Image 1: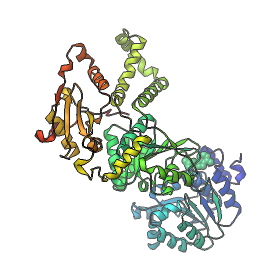
Image 2: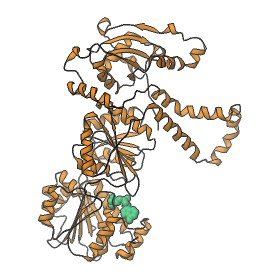
Image 3: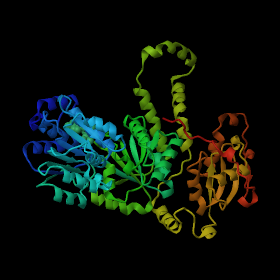
Image 4: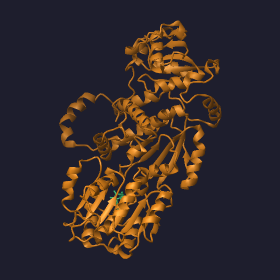
Length: 600
Ligand code: AMP
């Protein structure tokens, strides 16, 4: 394996990167560093973030700048403020032994006056976003006439973000005999045009196959009905308790909705989208960077500036329209030789899109079944057991309490202790997933449902109104029962308030100890389930009747032992919305149920 020494870098640089813990050059560095040090022509490199490209251009540039000349000799352009800061910091760390070298980042969204002051140090290397750089040039604060190295980093992103004109202006403002290095994760025509027009005799290199995801990324997809996307997301997260990932959504609104729901359901999640102020975005990104946040829900644009290398998962809440966007998203995991998973939640009609992406990225996707309640409970249980096995024990701090704890619990056997300890953490998963329906779409359901979805309007309401499948009823189960003083009026109120649709017909209401069962016509089921997705009250499709009754009866041990629960205690009602007052019970419907709030 080749070493950094063999690449011909100066001792000061070698010392700095050794201190950073870099042992061997990454593939892109093996190619770019010797090329930069021994040739004179330009470079077009097809490479994604995470491949080590900052060092690939940063190290040879540092090797070649003249420390004595206090002029901007290298200019690095980057699409976002965050990347700009990151690149400047990386290069500063490579230059930690080169005392004279000054590296300054300038970017939009920050006071230009304070950047004036930073520029007074007369940087050797300037890292800039295009818009701010032009501003500084126009104000006469930055002069590019001594630039010998120009780096366009994430060139495709700069074009996507509308910097084309700015880029051309800058390319025309730097000396003609500079060397240009262009890095891009994708190679759209626009980039090829820029390369042709502004670059000289460019050598092309590519790290990995063009447009392909990194080798250590596994691509998997789950197929559910569109209305069950969120449920599927929760199950995927629950199945991966140590997840550290980004959930990509299409729009700001969807980003907000998904993040809000996750937070409300007790997950350690937050949103990143364009409606946030710069300060808010910084806070969220920092929290995520330091892993104070496990799940970041983001739009593609907002996530651009975020460079985190250890993501375990990238989740496509929907498939992007553009394969290149998919490549970009999935390229955010599986970095630095770690394994990563790119998950897509698709609905039934998106299977062809998967095939299309497979062809473009030359990778196969694996279809996985959405985990069922039992799989998740098992996974969570063993995660808990692993955590217990590996917990750090601080003897000194805990010893003073041990006698007292031991005395208090000594009547319990080891089995009792373990059962109690595990139940403490685990009961809420068992409770939540006890009757969780299978949300996988099988070939059979797929055909039926596709037909049905095709007829429905995008808002889920049937165009054919009440005539559609009115005969079929589906039994639903609501997580409110006698314990919460439920009565039919209240149940109808909750349904009204949550669905905000008075045409929903509700029949055969049956209230038991902890739950309420009721019938809904088949064509309105999705609408109702979807509406309750946002609610603290859970509504699911009722499972097998006998099992439901059994679990309800046994869900409150004490009552059963006291003989308090009798079969006849169940009250059965038949009702239709028209028979009941529609006065809602807003107050009572709130906060009946908090599925694992504060869960970590
Ligand atoms: P980049 O593609 O420049 O964003 O780099 C991705 C990550 O790899 C960064 O966290 C770098 O610090 C790290 N890195 C770059 N070069 C090396 C190397 N030769 N050995 C180990 N880590 C590296």
